Length: 394
Figure 1 (cartoon, rainbow, N blue to C red):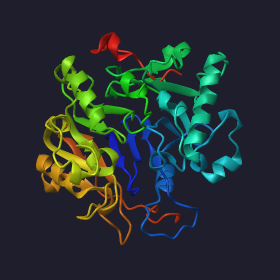
Figure 2 (figure 1 turned 90 degrees about the vertical axis):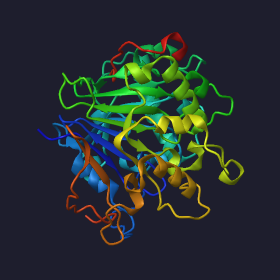
Figure 3 (figure 1 turned 135 degrees about the horizontal axis):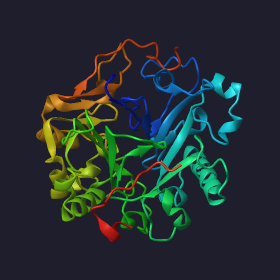
Figure 4 (figure 1 turned 60 degrees about the vertical axis):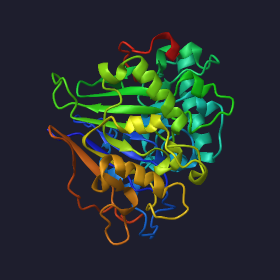
């Protein structure tokens, strides 16, 4: 039986992570597919699309699909390439041309109500249209609404009554999700941390502040009382968001009861930006806030921080930000701070950071020779368990 894996793709300042479970179920968290076209010879770009096609399962019609796609928020560097590389529309109309183009079907989409509030790029528009197509099927009680390619999960409640008629499709902070693409998992679950109502209801409609944040939880055996790996994903969530998360989680004792803040792998929010620690610019806000530092203190032995970003240099960039890198290193040590842009390069091409989930925790996977090195070369998704947050979560 193969181990579960977490793959952090090298996509510059952006996020794209693929979780593959023991049974082959896949969860893609964001996408930033930068390849311009087949045959792109830019050897600084790893070919994410080709690697996805090689990594994902095929359905009975031999069409590539991902079980779950989670959009943490709609910024371009989290959904770039969605329109071109993923299929939109009725999955029954998926054609031979779509297969030839390598368009990837999405069985189940996770999104927050923020996608209806603010749109800043064409890929986000396309994602919203696809999500709303699925929402309409469920509102209309269409016969095919729960079929693969039409499934949808709404993350969070915005206090405005958005999607109030679809609460059976909604998950809120404090929920533990164990069902993905209508399949119950015994070795994997997700603890949802955000967005809370106050984040989604915020008048500024800040997509970063309202990012979907969750803890991915892996076991080796269903009877295990501890987790083999805990990985935190937070999109571009800033220090304000983590202040809310820390307060809610500790107040309801979910950090103790569910180990909801523990982590072995921490995807540095906003591509190793200083915004995780305090307001930007860092020169005007040089002291990290206590709350984000406290979250980092939940690191387990051997924990690693992953910066999904360009190379972190001692310059004025933000993100990635050099002073933020130093703060992470204080917590985990230099060897356990990993940067997707500099990881195991083949020539000029960075390779994905991949961990296998073992009984000893997450272990760096051996670098597998790939033909996808240079760009272009080659219904109900959730099961509610008791929430520690109670009514205020919604």
